[in-house]
Image (cartoon, rainbow, N blue to C red; front, side, top):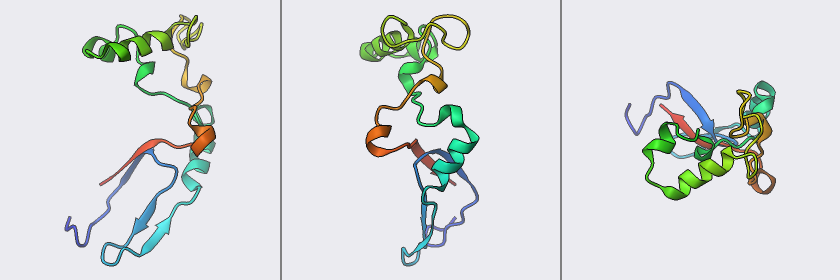
Length: 122
């Protein structure tokens, strides 16, 4: 679309606590979601509200683990999968591993509230 008159066809939410839409011509606020995204997300996915599932929750010897050369990330993945460190006795499949999403809490949420990390528009 034309950057001066963009056409918004859809939004994919994988982040942000709120969304503000501004008019391109003068940057005036058209709409702001306020806390709507957080409220609706919590209602639809209560088991995931404030959950943390970043890259360190990947499977030990899984695709990310095997593909990365970052030894620090490998160590983080191993720690999240080890019940004697940060992992759970049941990673969701009956075996020890990374804790399921419903059993994690984003440590940042107590500071800056529940939020995801990105919002893609197109």
